[in-house]
Length: 302
Image (cartoon, rainbow, N blue to C red; front, side):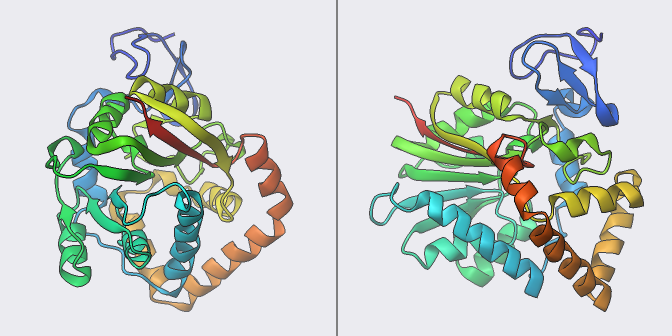
């Protein structure tokens, strides 16, 4: 057992932990899993600079295909929940694909991202308003009807405070859609699970994500898990290649080589085929809460 020589749990305040896989710590009270760097206040900014800033990912045929599918998943969850001409903020925008997709459906969109290169590109190329700052520094103008955060919350040191900052940006009964990796998924037993990353500071399960959201002043409307088509393929491949032991530079070089050669097409085709083959297993995993992604929709409580 490890005591508060490290720090208090950002969810429950407990200071006793149990070592778990890949050098991570599990809180003995609320069971959230933590990267030891979660107590380093500069960790998120440092990881952003090393892993993401000035490393804008260009869209290829394959990334466009995958993003199109994920955009439609988000639209299916939003459709029917929003007023006409709704205002939406996406935090952590990636290539801006979702913002463009929703703008084409008459939603007023804005984005927030810590990467300057991402913000500049989306603002200049797509004409979408962007905020290159922490969420707490976004100007409080007209309130948003919805905030979308896909794979963002696991990067922050203080997830409850982060969610409280998001709450202040929402209008009355505004909603938030959150996706995070599910540390309770089956693939998390493998050392190469796709979400074991040095820049992930907090690892949620459905129970711990619900706890964080409710502590921040939201009412959970829907929560479940989804098993991605690439989950098992990537977890097994990364385990065999020991990807988690490679530096950021080594991974970037590998990724760029894959984008520019026939290897990349073969790799992604194999990924898609594996998703088709594992469809029954993926459906079952998602249904029983063991999918590799937690998906939550919550409403602001006044």
